[in-house]
Image (cartoon, rainbow, N blue to C red; front, side, top):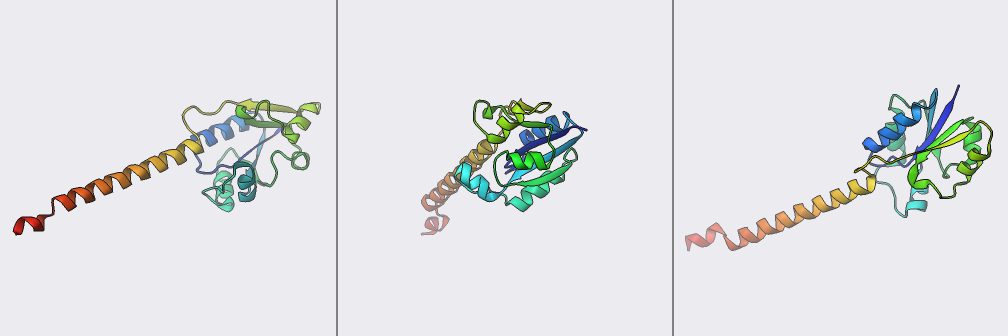
Length: 160
């Protein structure tokens, strides 16, 4: 039985997240997913996630290809990989060439492997956050423009 492990923040869950989960699940019999804690995300990304850990973990656990969700307090921790008896770790290809202790350990173990997946083009949590900010700015600009128009074209002024 092959056990596959992948991990991530899974903040603002989107199709790219689903794609990596489904591709990972296809490599083995069980998919164990490490969901990063709020503290870990803040530590390595410099900001807290939008969605709290408990909700992100529950969302990921509800995906039918996911066998088990585990709390990830350290990026790709060797002890966690050993405890879960992982055969394959999958990770986004943006991690190629970056040192993660658990990935290096997996590569050194006979019969174990690391698989890098390309990101889904055109979608990321960062892009979604940027779109939200831009949309909010557009809404504010439209509201200010409408307010300015009303100020200049106040109907009560016509009654004088």
